[in-house]
Length: 202
Image (cartoon, rainbow, N blue to C red):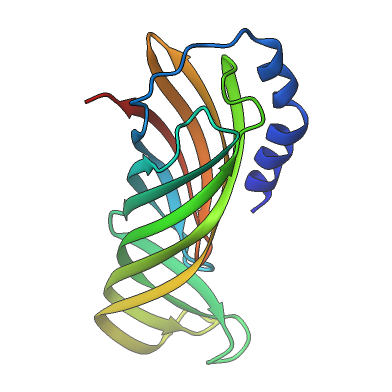
């Protein structure tokens, strides 16, 4: 959450002055579709790092100060090891194992871009998203403080869904006639992503 707060602070206090100082750039009316890719992590104590892909459609033109957009995202991790402290078998015991995580999210966000036509345009956004997650475990177990295995849970799969807030901040700039952007966002359930995106022209 700290990196997100820092990005929002930089966007609202420092970067706007840079954006306003730059000369305005022409904005194409078809800059409504964006695709992005990057990395992120999912979970609270179980931190799974992986790849994130997304697509977005701007319901309002991108040169507006106040905007509205819809997004669809996917997140995938390779099989990773987790190690979580627990008191189930006394102080020092842990819950350990391997798991693979994948989720899809669909949401709507509103954005605020103080200088939307500047060469460099910082923005912040917030909204709501529905998220569906699948996790496949491959041999989880409880371990006592002395290192001995207390209980084997075995492989298993879990599915969960939730609806929650989405917040984030980013930078948008034009290069070679195309809009590019860098963005950080936090999804429901302590899931955060960093991504680089570009507009699509049809």
